[in-house]
Amino acid sequence: MIENLALGLSVAMTFHNLGFAFIGCMIGTAIGVLPGIGPLATIALLLPLTFALDPITALIMLSGIYYGAQYGGSTSAILLNLPGEVTAVVTTLEGHKMAKRGRAGAALATAALGSFFAGTVATLVVAASGPVLTNLALSFGPAEYFSLILLGLIIATVLAQGSIFKSIAMLVLGVALGLVGTDVQSGQVRFSFGFFELFEGIDFVAVAMGIFGVAEIIRNLENPENRSGTVAKVGSLMLTKEEFKRATPSVVRGTIVGSILGILPGGGLALSTFASYMLERKVSKYGHEFGTGAIEGVAGPESANNAASQTSFIPMLTLGIPANAVMALMIGGLMIHGIQPGPGVIQAQPALFWGLIASMWIGNLMLLVINLPLIGMWVSLLRLPYKYLYPAILVFCAIGVYSVNYSAFNVFETVLFGFLGYLFFKLALEPAPLLIGFVLGPMLEEYLRRAMVVSRGSALVFVERPVSAVLLAIAALALGAMLLPSIRRKKDQALEE
View 1 (spheres, rainbow, N blue to C red):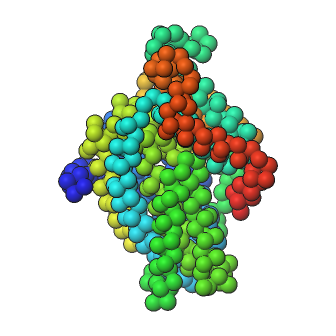
View 2 (view 1 turned 120 degrees about the vertical axis):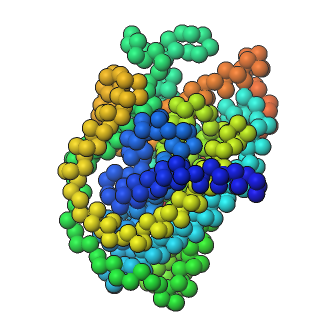
View 3 (view 1 turned 180 degrees about the vertical axis):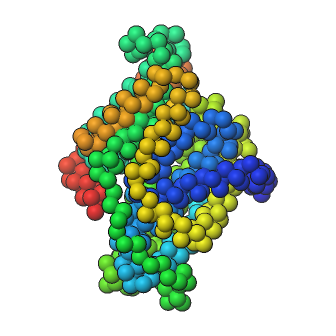
């Protein structure tokens, strides 16, 4: 373990990688502070830039954007009562109340310090569990991999917000889109409708950038965020002895909750913050203060969201299963670089795996420095009008997607998927299952074919092998439970709360 971490530090501490880690953390914090953008759209828009970078450098930068957004989202939530990121919604409940009482600085310091502690612990969890899960996954055959990917798809659908039937429909659509193009085994062209540009499949960057980038811009233009509110005065960043004593156990509990729930495919990241907040309300001795500015309501959820954002890398790196749409984007980015995420990564790309883990801790340390001393800059950023942002984003988007293959067709694809993403929003269709299905669909087909070849066409191979049978049983139980009206109502109520 020590040798592996030394290898990771040697990779992450190079001047080149440190620079891009800092850039990622700065961008992540900025888009976390600015409501209406989010890490998903930002990573989708920046994905073309990473093609000129080494895979490890690209992953370090994208990772910095991802968990940097979790830090930045708390700033606007506390100072303006406007969450910059969905995981910061819970922080507004107590954080802004603290700001109104003149304790905005203490709330910001609690969020930053709690996130740093949670990020450090989650990094150790990733480092410890990664090799264990990898060794387990290396014993899997095609049948086990097929069942594992199917389980991941179903859980992502079950935990998605909204109707389970709509989520399944989006998942199936994503899988279908992923199968467009030339079949590798038979050489047959599928679903191209005569467009030779689709012979190699639908461009991943166009799908991601359109559904999550362009569609997000259209939504923001239709419903512009109100950023003209009064920004609360920051004041002292020092916590009192009583505040520190109350916040410490909440940080520990939030770290545990986030580390566990972050691994779940689907909405584990957002779920962790809500679960942590509800836990704090139940176990805190100061439950009567919730709703008036309880520091536990900031410490727990902020620790949970940062821990969850980092443990969500575990299934992506070790099993090749994305825990959320951002991880699906990163899988797509690695595949474009010729790297297949999964159990072979640690053996084939040890520098990438351990370098990323080392960069997580370094990135969290950077974010601690970025968020507290530079709080004045982020406050100024909160007043930046959106009308100056979106034209530059659209131009950057068009240039980026064109530069991938130097094809105007890809730009038209992006526009098409942008309008589709907006339509999905209007119809209350969650797009995350579509992207996860798009990434995992070809892998699901590949392992299905391999398993059927090994078994000489017998589908019984999926239930004859114990691990595969257990995974399929869990998938069936999860899907069956969500189809029950009573359980479905409870899930919807929990998500609404």
